[in-house]
Amino acid sequence: MAKQFDGWTIVFDLDGTLVNTAPDLLDALNHVLVEGGLKPVDLPTISTMIGHGAKAMIVKGMAAQGAEPDADRMDALFDQFLAYYEDHIAVGSRPFENALDALQTLTHEGAILAVCTNKRQRSTDRLLDALQISENFAAIVGADSVPDRKPHGDHILLTVDRAGGKRSRAIMVGDSRTDERAARNAGLPFVFVPFGYETETVDEIAPDAVVSNYSELVPALLRLIG
Image (cartoon, rainbow, N blue to C red; front, side):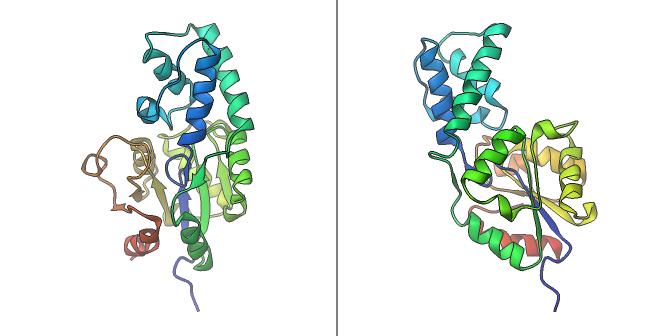
């Protein structure tokens, strides 16, 4: 008997989509800021930069205090951030509510699952391993393991390829405009999760489906595939 998602690949973004990584990213940023003689910042100050990389968060955190790093200092701060973050990568980071149940259901119903993230590959692997969820995914593709990162559509398409899926039967799930643009550039449907770090509204993102909790994901995907 055929399963509901046979032949379909579901591609997930990571930060703000599968996992709430904000606590550990903020902790790493504040470690760098305090070590540099600045004050720690709160999450609202840098939340819009999550998903745009560590350097964007560092710049935002410093700018909030009237500081600006030069190129050499930025490189040093970036290295310091990564070293601290990778050593504390899953202290407070956890999958979003019902995410693991949704992954298990999709796998049971024949879906191929993959992760496509603008996080560095090493950090991505460490996080998913620490949370013990790596085995759910046929491919895990970080930004530095492809020629062009999201919003370039090839990042998603290469992820589908590496997962052993078909490009014509794939769907992207993400929390940002970057994910939406990447899905459109790849020619794939896009499911938006509004509980992540995006500041644009659902109407502005204009996704093919919206799920406010992972308990809604499987029914939403079934509606998309018809």
